[in-house]
Every structure is written in structure tokens, then in C-alpha cells.
Amino acid sequence: MRSARHLHDAVSALLLFLLLSAVVPAARAQQETDDESEFSYVCGAENGPENWGNIKEEWATCGTGLMQSPIDLSDRLASQTPHLGYLNHSYRPAEASIVNRGHDITVMFHGDAGSMWINGTAYHLRQLHWHTPSEHRVNGRRYNLELHMVHLSSENKAAVIGLLYKIGRPNHFLHELESYLQRMASTNEKEENVGVVDPWVARGDGEAYYRYMGSLTTPGCDEGVIWTVIKRVATVSSEQLKLLADAVHDGFDMNARPLQKVNYRDISFFSPDDHHERYYAAADH
Image (tube, rainbow, N blue to C red; front, side, top):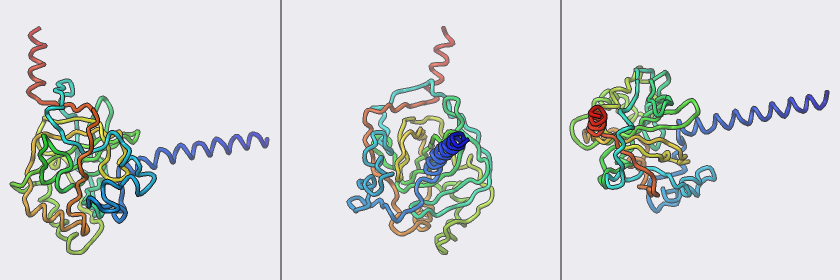
């Protein structure tokens, strides 16, 4: 009887361990880190990007990982990959709040905001946030702003869509959030409900994209992230850029991680033109 009880206790402990092991990475992948006081984007500082891996044991990958993000998406290194096909996503309006995480401004979805599909797996949209200037570069060029749309699968694997912006006409999605950002900047509020938000508006246009395997770009820099960076560059006004900078905490108005080494990773590129050429070539045969 005693041995049966011991077996029951051991099985219960094992199940609890497995549950916690699954939950903790999920929370980290979705929220990244919420404690901005422990790291900075100031190169050369004790808690700057080059030292993130030394600040905490669980952040070690920031310094030792070989698949880190962001990178320079060079057409010289990218391979044309028509079989990737068009992005398969189905977004929908959902309840959301806008959150000042200190190191960035984030829109957190509280309902079902839809998904994107990669290789038969659904990745559910959880949140989106901005980095100034852009973290990824394209052929060496850095842009004024980058939006990250963070998705998670049921197995807690992350997939992120990155969108690049240059100074120009106001961005429609940011325009819809301007009143909340202004209030957040003037009151130092941490979070505010914004009602229903439509992520289709954030996604914008552009079908050509780069694809590679990388990491989160804030501590703990977890790897295994599927990155999709849209090639078409959208626009944002200088006033909207300033509004995002004013809303975050002092010292985080520039919140872009420096470029990381590619380390012989494959960079794929999908273009609708290449996809059409392959389709019609196959049809001719």
C-alpha cells in the first residue's frame, strides 16, 4: 500500500514538473521580458546588448546562441524559394489593450485575433510591438521603424512577422492608436484597454518576404523562432515615430538590438513573380 502511494506521489510530481516546463517557456516566448530595468540598448554599458547573456543564467543564449536575431537580409545570401508560397494567415478583430512594457509599446490581444499557417501548423497571433529604428536590415539598409507580430503555436513555438517602415505618409494602424499613445505618454500609464483591434490593418500590403530561423530579440533571446520579414517597406510619419518614443520610458526611445551573425543560416526569399513563373513553367510541361 505504501509503495503504491509512493508511486502515485512520484507520478504526480513528474506531471507537475512537465506542466511547469511547458508553461514557463510559453509565457517567456509570448511576453519576452517585462523587466526593463535589468537590460538596456546602450552599447558599451554594463547591461548593454553585448552583455545580455551575462546578466542572468536564463539569458545565456543571448551571448552563446548561433541562431540569433536580427540579421542583415542580404539578397546576395538569400535563395529564391518559390515553393514557400504566399503567406497563409486569417486575422480577425479582437479585444486588446496597449501596454507600456518599458522597453517597448505592445498591443496585447485578449481574444482570438486569428492565425498564420506555416508547414501545416497554426501559429496564433498574441501581440505586436514596435522597435525604433528597425532591427533587421535589408541589403545593409536600416529603416526608421519595425513592427513585430508575435505568434505562438499550440506547442509554444514562436513565429514572428516583421514589417519595416520609412518616414513618409502616416501609418493607418498607428493613427487609430494615437489618442491612447498620447494619453500614455502624458500620464505614464502602464496599460489601457483599446477595445477591438483589427490586425489586418497592421499587416498591411506586400507579398514578397524573407524567411529564416532565428530568435527573440530581447532577453532571454530564445531560439527556434520562424522569422518572416516582409520586403515591401511601409511608411510612418515622423510625428508618429515621436509619439512611440515619448510613450516608452526614458532610455528606450531607441530600442533596436544590434545585428547578429548569420552563421551560415539559410535565408529564403519568396516573390510572387518567381511563384508565377514556376507555375506556368510546370503547366507548359
